[in-house]
Image (cartoon, rainbow over all chains, first blue to last red; front, side):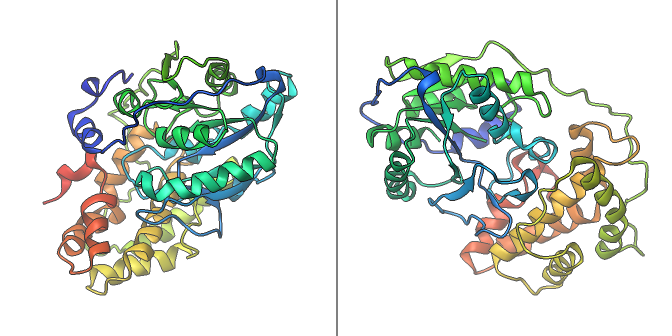
Length: 154
Length: 227
C-alpha cells in the first residue's frame, strides 16, 4: 500500500518529486444540485482514445472524445509516460475509466444522469497547453447539460 | 490533473476528482480531491471489482456537495500489494538466445495473445495501426541503425508491450501482474531490444528521439537495467 511518496520505492518517488506542479492563488468552488439530480461527465487524463483516433504526443494538451456507447474493445491508451501500471487497464478498463460504474450509479438513482460524451486528456501536459482546450470543453459540457465532472488521473 | 479542476470550475463546471499522489494535489489545490493509496495506473483500485470501484466513484462524487475548497478527503479503503510469487517462471521458454529473433518471439506469443483476447473480449493493442510483426520489424530496423520518428517508434513499442503482457496473462500459470512485468523485463527479447535502443535514442541529434530515450521508453523502475 502506498501512502506517501516517502513510502514508495525511492526511484519512483524521485521521479514523482521531479514533476513540476502548477500553483494557483485561489481555488474556485461552485455549489450545485444534489448528486441525484446532476448530469455527470467523466474526464480522464490517462491518454485514452478510440482505436484509430489520433494518439497523444509529448506536450499535447488537447483532448479526445469518448462517446458514452464506446465499446470496451475500442478504447486504447497512448499516454507518453511509462511510469505507471497498464496491466490493470488491460484487464479491466473500468479501473482507469469507470464508465460502467457511473452507468450503474445512474441506474440505481444515486447520480442523476450521465453525459452523452466523455473525454480524455493525456496528463503529462504543460498546464498552459491544456487550458485553452479545457476552456473550450467547458462550453461543450454546458451545451450537453453537464453540471459535474469527475476527473480521473492515472 | 488538478489543473483541469481549476480550469473547468472557473468556467462554471463543478468538479471533483481522484488523487493518486497526495503531495502533488497539496500543491495544485484543486477544488475537490479524493485521495486514494492505489498503485499508479489503477485510480479505481482493483480491476474486475465493480463494488469496490463503485465505492471509489461514489466517494469522489459525494465531495461535490462541499464548497470548502480546496479540499482533500481520504478514501478509507486500501489495496494490498499483489503477492510477489518469486518462484513463478514463464511456462514457455521465451528467453532470448543467439538463434532467436524478436520476430520469432512475437510470432510465438500470438497464440497466447489470441487466447487472452478471446477471454477478455477486448485488447488494448492498436495505437500504432501496425500489426505486431510489422511493429517488431520497425524495432529491429531501429536497432540496426535506421531510427524511425520517435512518435512512430513509441507507438509501435507501446503496442508490442501491451501485446506481450496481454499474451502473458493467458499463460497456463499466469502469475500476477508483478511477476509478468518482471518476466517482460528479464526474459524477453523485446525488453532487451528496448534497453539496447535507449543509448541510440539518447545520442540522436533529434530532440524527440532524446525525449523517448531519456524519458518515455524505459520506466524509472527499470532504468537500473541500462548498461
